[in-house]
Amino acid sequence: MGATTTKTSPTSSPIKLTISSFSTSPTISEQSPPYTSSKLSGNEYHKLSNLALDNLTEYLEGIIEEVDVERLEQLAKESNQVAKRGGPASEWDCEYSSGVLNLRLGSHGTYVINKQPPNQQIWLSSPKSGPKRFDYDREHKVWFSNKEGEVVSLKELLDSELSVAFDSPVDVPLSGEEC
Image (tube, rainbow, N blue to C red; front, side, top):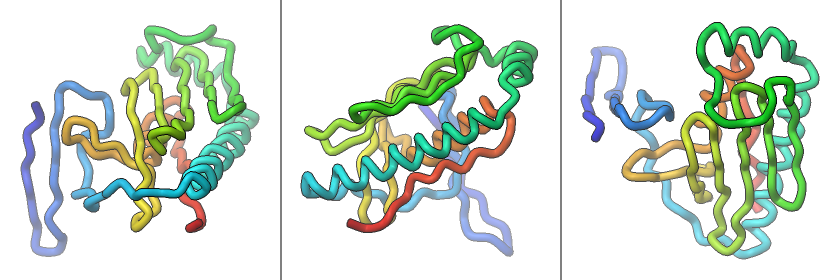
């Protein structure tokens, strides 16, 4: 289980630090807003999830076209960031079809991000942090996961993990217009 510590300084608001030994997800963060799962109509869910996955696909395709894959593969090997499972090291691509986004990052592994209309969720299978299910919070306009008390947004998780894989800051565009 994780330990929680709250620290303050004269010039800042309290920061909640959560230290966990069982997850590779981001473990130190400012106190998260109280996300709540919003009840969406079928049309709202499809508009929001399609917008998120379409924006993500376009962004990732652009990054993959610009990166030096050979350099990233070498860096991954040197820093022992090679995924235990995944496709060949030379396979770097992004494909989106029928609500399923496959992001293949060579030796970093394969991410699968897909819509789950019956649950109104977006599911993520990450080679780094494992499976997670994300609900939508209409008030904060964010897809979030609350698994075993660990709250993380889809954006936070992808920004963190993909920044390591691409060896540069990643800022995925997931938020969209209100339906």
